[in-house]
Image 1 (tube, rainbow, N blue to C red):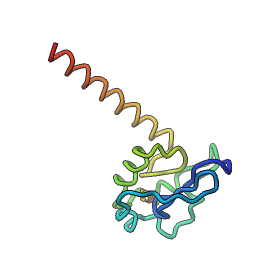
Image 2: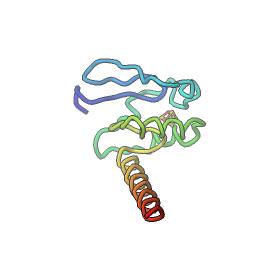
Image 3: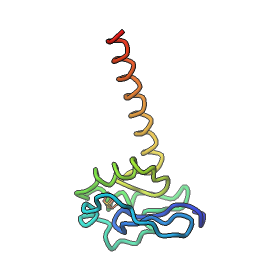
Image 4: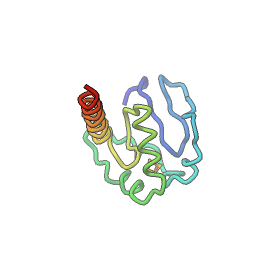
Amino acid sequence: MTETASRSTAAAGFTITDGVPVELGEDKSWQDLANCLGVDPDLFFPERGASTREAKEVCRGCVVRDDCLEYALANGEKFGIWGGMSERERRRIRRQRALARAAATSERTTATA
Ligand code: SF4
């Protein structure tokens, strides 16, 4: 990961963008229940090609997993494991949701025409 990359963990409650800590903002109360509190943040930012298994194991039993995932999706977190998912997995969800929105919009347009 480069120094200019955005980096954070859910439990830490902040992200680092271009070396500057930035608070995550919004309602962060769910972070108090995060399984990753106190866990080495490096675990959630494995090197390219490295295993994500350990991080996902931490996330597996996390009670705020959905909140964490939705936060990452809403904020376009590009790096790391959030909500038990890698960036690639989150990209797939964003694509699926975009397709679903497009289909719903198309259906509404067709119904009103
Ligand atoms: S889902 Fe994972 S990264 Fe998110 S708060 Fe829970 S343990 Fe942390």
